[in-house]
Image (cartoon, rainbow, N blue to C red):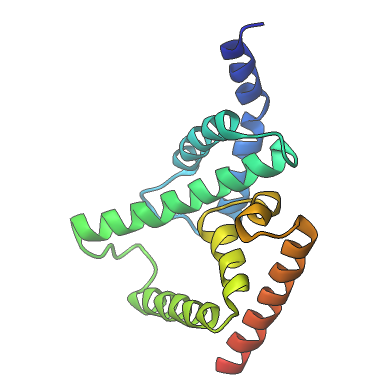
Length: 168
């Protein structure tokens, strides 16, 4: 079977994963009025195709693709909200301005808490949540094995939780 056909088959086999993630996101947070489930699925399908092309065989494809799809959908939500606000001004149907300010304040608090982490833990958090890398892929970037990455990640998350709770 030609490589192109294998690629298409892999994408088709995992389209349900895209829909399941979109439904989960829809259930866990209210979608802005200008974004529907199909918009999320479209962003997820593009991420799935990219995941098929970039997967290197480390870990499970489902785990890798799931993370890529989820990040793409969340990025779609954030980007579309920003574009709508810039183009049309505030939409009265979108959550209140106070919630946006609170979200920005929370993001700033998290950023400050991350800056307080040791450099290696900062790098693990950045690679995991900003770059979307798996723990397997973070190891070589940081110069440690996956088990050590897991330890650093756990320590960083615990420190962030403690620092954020203390700041609240």
